[in-house]
Image 1 (tube, one colour):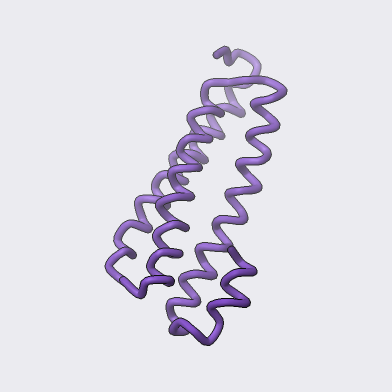
Image 2: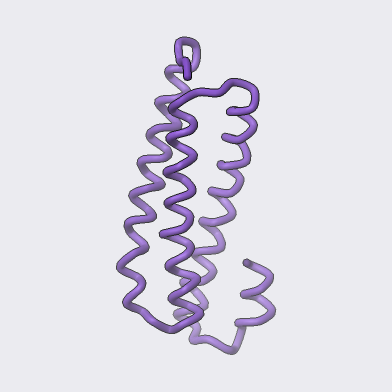
Length: 109
């Protein structure tokens, strides 16, 4: 997504929308890395709180980054109202991940 934006959108969309797109890319990258780590954690030791965290992280990714991508590509700024819901999903996902870390020794599926 970052390469697409850098090569295909630069100079095509307004600078403000390009900034929104780049914000979506940054948060997408960070949470994609977190999701990879959680996938490895689930592979080694399945735990219900990690699964819940994963679902919330994916939802956050779709709502937060997805709304910013769509807003930048379409110019429809009203889509920005969806973005905070993705942020809330991420906060819940991180909270679930913290719970998983504290419950690790006793957690069962």
